[in-house]
Length: 219
Ligand code: MN
Image 1 (cartoon, rainbow, N blue to C red):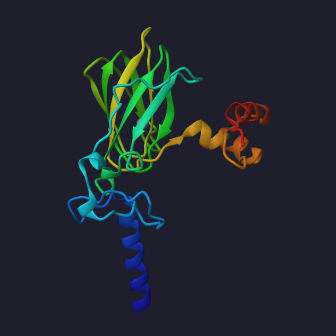
Image 2: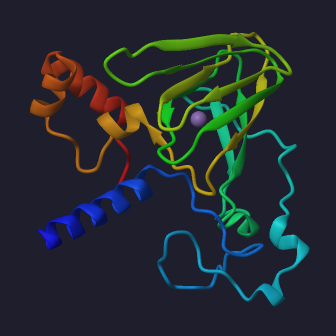
Image 3: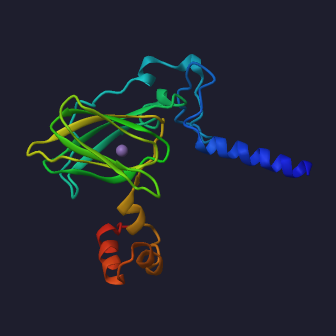
């Protein structure tokens, strides 16, 4: 019985870790050591005595990303890999550029809530709640408007204007992660079996093949 209680305690601990946001820091900062080969949860700290202002600094978010692609959007993400001073601080930021009628396609961030501010143009944004309700919350945003996408939920932003749009998004993880739904489902490597996809989506194999062809990556 004692070992069973122990196992339950371990399970509870594992679950609480899995459900938590980024862990709290145990020191003022932990600038990522880009030369370390160790794998830990986060990035290894460099000697704090060697930290400098540049470790907490990044320039260039005023520059537009290239949104001339199939979906018409570009995300410039500043996570702990790009800005070493973010390591252990539980936060990151992104600039998102949208061409006219451009879309930041359906995606989720497995480790972060996102708060988005429109600084140029107009966006239709939305997220869908988990089962069983799958309720869509959506809103048309204009310059200065703010919208929140709760952690892990599928969301999108669509520029419904004739001019480019720009947004700044803050995320509650140093490494939010990104799952683009179409890429993950129809462009996995190796591909998910047609038997799984036809049943999952309740459509014929031809439709699945067409979708796979769209999202197949060049390896
Ligand atoms: Mn997002």
